[in-house]
Length: 472
Image (cartoon, rainbow, N blue to C red):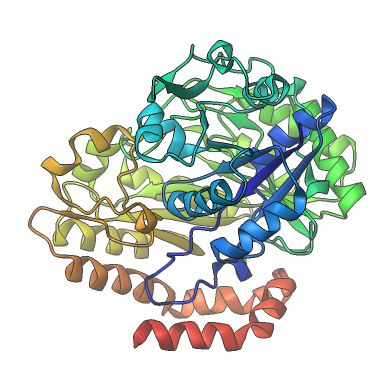
C-alpha cells in the first residue's frame, strides 16, 4: 500500500497576524521522516507533504493528497495543528472514503482512543513511537488491526486501544530520516535566525525520552527513560548530511544531548578524528555542565548551547521542575560563554503559581544573566503534561486546541488577567533586546552569522509588516 504522510500547518501563530516564523525557523519533520525511512526500507512506497514548508488551506491540501494517489494517509499533529489536519481528513473522507486515515503525533498520544469517538474522519490512531506500528499497519492493508500493538481503533463504534507497543531499544537499528522526500531540502529549511554561523543547516534528534518529570513537559510519545544513538551512528548521520546535502551546521534538538557523558565525549573525539567540517548547537541541562565538558564541546565545533531556565523565581521553579540554585545558573552560563560558545536561555511566562511579582523577578533575573539570546514562550498546559490534570485548580484555562502553540495565553493564573500577562511578556522581550550589549552582539553577527543577516535584510518587508500588524 502506498503511504502519504501529511504534516499539517497549525496557522494560529497569533490571531489576526501573519505567521512569519516559517521564513526564519523551519525545521524538517523528523518524526514522520523516520517512519517514512523505515517503510521505504521495507519496500513500501512513501511520500511526505510538509504543509509547514508550503502552507495551504485544507482544500489545497486535499488536492495535493489526491495527486499522490495514496492508500493510507498519516497525519502527524500537535495539539495546535490537529483541527487543521482533521479538516483535511474530513474532506478526504468525503471525496475518497476508501483511503485509510491515520493520526499520530503528540495530540493522538495524549488524548488517546477517546479521540476516535468525536472525530469520525479518522480511522486509526498510532499511539507511541510510530516506526514499527505504521509498518505493520501498512502491511496489514488495514485488516485485523486489533492484533497490532500501539493502535487505537473502533470496536462496536467506540475507540479502543490494542496492546501497548514496546519502545525501540536500539535506535541505531533505524535508518536515517528520509530527507530525500522533502522536495526543497535543505534550501527551504533553516534553523532560527541568528542561531547558526553558516548554511545550509538542519536539525537532528539523536535520543528519545527524558528521565526528568517537569510539570509542563509532555512525555506521551517517547515516555520517560533515556535511549540514544551511539556516537558512531551520529557521526555517520552528520557525515551523510554534510556530503550528500552540503549541510554545514546542525542543531541537536534532543532534550538532553549532554545527559550521557561518555556518549558526548566519544562523539566529540570522533568528530575531531574525522575532521568533519561542520559546527553544531545543542540543548543542555545545567546539572550536566562542567569545565571539562564545555572544553570538549567547544573543541569539537559547538557554536551555541541552549538552556531551559523557565523562571527566575525560586518558588515557581521548585513547583515545576528539579530545582537548581539561581546563583549557580549564572555561574554555569558564564562558564559556557568563557569557553567561547553563545548562550541562549529558554523562559516561560504564565506558569501556575506565578503572579506579577514572580514574573518581574524572572525578567530582572534574565537581564542579570550572561545570555546573548532568549526564547520566551507563553505557558501552555498540554494534555500530556503532568500539570494538565489539575490545571483548572490554578487558574482559568481556555482549552482551544488551535491556539495551544505556546504563543497564546490560553491559561491565566489565579489573581492575574490576560492583559497583564501580555504586557509583562512584551516588557520581557523589549527590555532584554533593547540593551546596548545585545545590540552589539547582533552587530557581531555581521561576521559571526552573515547568512542570518542577509536573510533578515531580504525579508525586512515581511518583518515590518508583521510588527505593524502586531502593534495595530
